[in-house]
Length: 320
Image 1 (cartoon, rainbow, N blue to C red):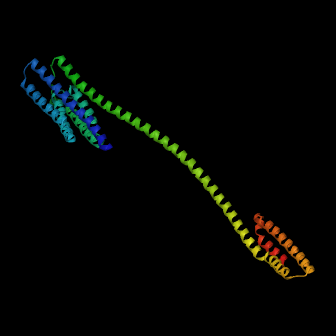
Image 2 (cartoon, rainbow, N blue to C red):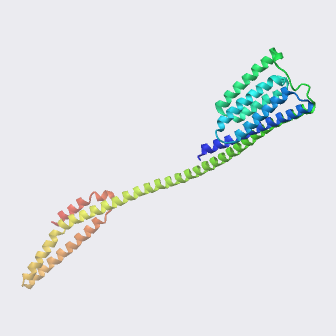
Image 3 (cartoon, rainbow, N blue to C red):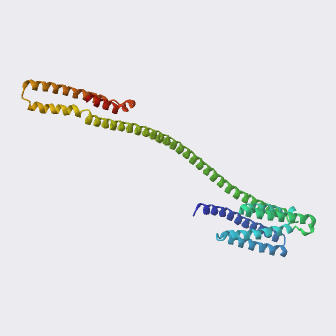
């Protein structure tokens, strides 16, 4: 059973309770009226209709207790009760008699049994009927009789209390239903407020996480840029080193190797000494070139990096 069906079930239970108590109280009022009428004297014109009404309302009570087709039963009972109220208007003194209580009670019953547009239609129809009956009583008073006229006071008081008790009962049922709905509404409002607080807290957490992610992304981008720059610098250094190694050092190393070959073949001591001096000079030159290369490779300034190739070319030209 979904939530909508559950709500309808609760609504039908309240309506069913109002309808059953209305039928039961009406039957009790008719029984009391019948007993009092028998006590003061047997009048067939009063006794037989009263018995008929008792049988009718008790039958409706038993029929309504069955939960199937409640909407249909509700409408049938209301139509019958409406007819009994209108009929009672003409035989119980109209708006000046006890039927005025039944008239008010009917309005409460309609308000409790129906909702929405259906309740509005029923109330408009019923109030229009009351207006027509009131006009009839004003302009055609001979149409209204009061069978309660001349009854003992205790009978009148008892019937009034039964009808007033029914009104109080209906108001109590509607009040209890309202209080339950009110409590339920307050509970829902508290749940909604709790959910709003949780959502606000989660939004704050998400905001903090978003800020952290944004900061991490910015740091990541900065780190990537820095690392990329370092890699590019290293690559540039490697390229320059390869350029220098293949051009700047090749000439002195080649000369040095040639002198070594000459030294191996030379047998004259004086010539060998001269060749060794030249070899020493060439080795010293290679050492200087290597120091210069190291100095150039270790230069990391961004503006100097652009001049590395030029410096390498200059070293190469100086070595020639």
